[in-house]
Image (cartoon, rainbow, N blue to C red; front, side):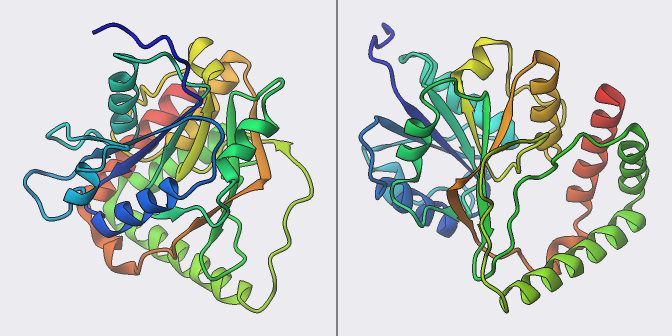
Length: 283
């Protein structure tokens, strides 16, 4: 099949794993955006077939959505890579490639158009939007403003290497974030006043300019799941690219899940693998 000569502005990739309700809400929110730029929407279903948590049939039948079912769980960036490779079979590299969890939505219908317009001249390689926890003023970006030290990353590797220690750490982290969210409900959100260069963007929603790929950036994360933020940060750092936090672009994230998944051994193994890979590869 010949490659389409037309240049697409935005490729929005949603990676689903057992979240059909959130995925449907995400798609409806994305399709309701006000855009002058062209948008292609791809949904990758990492859920096990036939499964009960896959992409709803209504999305699969929607001609405005490209539904991709790899038949296996490719992980977060693995699913994103599958969608981008599928797109590039017939289209040129988009101006922006956005990778997103399904549990976010767009409270501002013009947010992606503003991304396109605001960074038309001298665009950064990676943009981290403001990501607000639903029902609170907690700001989840930047994921990290500055690069962590070698000791910190190897301490994480030690924490995640043992299941009991990992569970304890995750439990304390969950309590901390829930406390912050509860406290934030008593005060209004105070948005940042300007953009700033940061080290790492939150993985829930990341916008990649095409220059990220043209200069050698990829989605080839060396871990199945977790640590995508550090991988992107280190890729940008190695290639001399900018990661920019833009608080004028607001995305809403649903409330953090309950603590029920803290004792999941498979999830703990993925954290162990990712922390080991990141510490040994980059630090």
